[in-house]
Structures are given as structure tokens and as C-alpha cells.
Image (cartoon, rainbow over all chains, first blue to last red):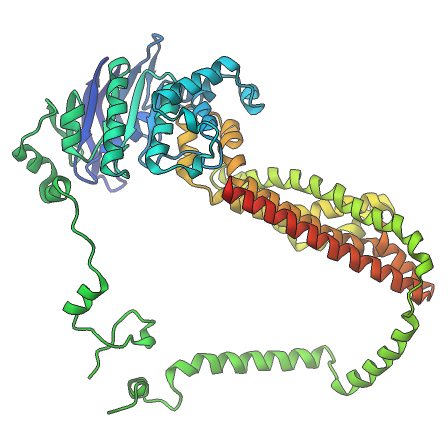
Length: 287
Length: 273
């Protein structure tokens, strides 16, 4: 269970990036966080993880083993203990590409075994079997011996989920887990996260309102560092417009195809030679 | 119609086209520097060519090489290789720790600048100078040679390792840290596997460099084939010296081929696996 109270983060000039964020995540919930770019979604997650230090407020994690962690203030050993209880999935997968898939899953347990044993790669057979089980859950057990760098994005994200599952956390945090995946992989990842949430709460940042509407049990929307919505995942068009503003159309439909050079030259008055004296930065108009 | 480049001249309105000014300036500055340096170093072409002829004449003394001395050269040659073979792993291990300490993403600023400064000092000192200092302390023999080569390796490899570690994706290190791993675990499971190809290929290259350096160090007291060469020259046994030169050539050439082969294996392995 996670309880965030009045979380604030300010820039040196005093501008607030997070302005009193408060919410709770309880057992059985799959909470999706929506918001325009720069609204403070990922920053909230980073503050909870302790990757960025919040200026004020608290984030309290009540772990399954009964321990309580004050996430915004704990450091060193306490922070490592807290982190081992949170399984994190990143947008860029962030796996160690030169290790095998199974090794990346094993990394999930590092905080739970003696450092010396981990240095000697002394994972037990039981742990290895469990890691394989985690891979089976994301349908990647066949890839256990492959080098992680040879996998596709969707496959890497599955491995990242397996790592988080193997970690046996009290809370899953997902920072835009499907933002760099194609639609079919995105769907597959959401379908993997949904059943996880039934056992362990998931707090995820997303850019796709249609995905959160379909899979999440609750949606939180952040705008300019404040929570502007917290409730039912199905948001109306008017609500989305309020959350995203000008970005709305980019969120609701795919971005238009990039302009080809032909398109550019058709509209550009600068068709002709490149002026070398400016290092080619400016096109020289022929007269 | 004006010529395609006419606007360049029109724009500058100067005697020289603008795009030629910098190259010409560089040419004159460099030319002056070279002329002055040649003067200071007493470069004299009128002495060079007669000297060259005399050199060719002296070269006659070196031939034919004294093949009978080949057998006596084998053990010193082995000593030269062993010198590098012992010094390189020692240097690699030392460099790895210096690399960790000198990497911004793993070490606090004070440790990083200390490590970087030490590496810089080591690189600035040529192996020969280190060896001469060590010979003064430890006496003549292969041992100071090993130490000198190991220290020399740190100067190069320490910097390369530190740079390789700094180029790692910060997000991957952060991700391994996000499971609660300690710094040593991050090194074991993220840093080490990711920099391993750079570590191996640079170390193999350094082994090749160390073989060459060990020949040179041999001549100033570390033993091995370099010492044989120096001895033969001092005793005016030029045919024997030629034999030492041939063995050295073979050694260095062989080391280069082996090193190339191994490095290609390491780098390809990284790509394919």
C-alpha cells in the first residue's frame, strides 16, 4: 500500500513542478497516471522511488511484510530496503543488454541475497527455477539463454516485467511502460500488467487514455503539478481536453507522418544552393 | 550570369577569398614553426645524405646475421614476452580499480579527480623513466621491468576504462539500483558486463604495446631480448645484434597478429552473441 501526501518538488527558481500531490494506492488497484508532457507524472514516480529527492510531503510504503518505509527521506540501506519492495518497469526497458535474459531477471533479487553470494553468481536452483517461472509468466521462458540485447523492444519489456515479478515487490511502479512500443506490443504489456495488479498494486504512468480506460481500475490525472482528477478510468472527451489542453489531439490520434524532403522543397522559398560560408546552415537563394 | 561562386567574392570584397584565408594562415604559421624547429634541432640536409651513405656502409657489418646465436636468443626472447605477460594482467587489474574510481557515474568527485590525476601522472611518465627510478631502488633485472610496465599500463588503460564506464547508459545503472542493489552489485551486474568487450580488447592491445615496451626496457636493464641487443652492440658484435633485431621483429610482429586476432574475436563475439 502506498500513501502519498502533499508531495512537492520545486525548481531552484521556486517554480513548483509538483504542487501538493496526494493519493493512495491500495491492494487490488491498477492506477494509471495521465497528464500532458511535463505535468509531473514521471517526476512523482521518481520521487516515490527516491531517484529524485522531493522538497516536501511524504510518500509512505506499507510493505507486505508489515514494514513501513518513508520513501522521501530514507537513504542508504533503508532506501535499498524500500526499493527492493518496489518492482519498477521503465519506458526504455533499461536492461543490461550484454547479460542473458535470465541474468537480468536474477537482478531483481540482488537486494535480497548477500552481496558476496551475488558477486559469485551464487543463485540457488530454487531461485533459478523461480526466475524461469517469472519468465514463463510473460511468455519469455524460451529466451532465457538469449543475450538481452538481441531482443526486440516488446520482448525486453516483458523481461523487465519478469524481473519485477521475480523481485516479489509490494508495489509495482511503471514509468510509461508502453510509450516506446507499437500498439500490439502495448496491448500485450497491458494484458500482462492487469493480472499482476490483482495480487500487487500497480502504479503506472501512461500516455494513452484509451489504454488506461480499458485496463486500469482507477485513473489519476496531473496537470501543472497538481492532481486534477482521481477516479473512474473512463474519462470523457471534455475531461481529457482539460487534462491535455493543446496536446489532446496528439494523444487521441497518431502523429501525422513526417514531411519528406520533397514536401519541404515544394513550400520552401530557399530552393537552391547551400551557402558554404555559413557552414551550410542557411540556404542561399539563387538570383 | 555570374559564376557559381561569385557571391563569395562579392560578399568579402577582399584580396583573398574568405574560404582560403584560414588554410593559408595555418600554412604559414605551421611552415614558420617547422623552419624554426629544424634550425634549433640542427637539421642539416648537407650532412644527411653523406651520413646516409656511411650508414649503408656500416649496415654491411650487420650482415649476415649470426644464426648460431639464435639459440642463445630464445630464452631472452621468452623473458621479454613473460615480462609483458606478467605486467599486463597486473596493470589490467590495477587499471580496473582506477577506472572505477575515475568514473563520474560511480565515484564521488574527490575520488574521481584523485584517480584521474594519478592516471594522468602515470601517463605523463614514460615507462623508461619509471624503470630508471625503479632500477635505482630495486636494482637491475626483470622485476622492476614488470612494475614499470604495469604502472605504464595503468596510465593508458585506467583512462580508457574510466571513459568506457562513464559512457554507460545511466538509466541502466539506475534501473539495477532501483531493485535495491548495492554499488558493488551494480558494478558486478551492470558495469562489468557492459564494459567487458572494451576492457578485453584494450587489455589485449596493451599486451601488444607492452611487448614492444619490454624490448625497449630490456635495453635499459630489465633483461630479455632488448638487453641482448644492447650487449651485442656494446661489444661490437653486429651480426649477433642483427640476430637480436630479427628475433625482436618476429616477436613484435607475432604479438601484433595474435592481438589483432584476439581482439577481433572479442569484438565480434560481442556483436553476435
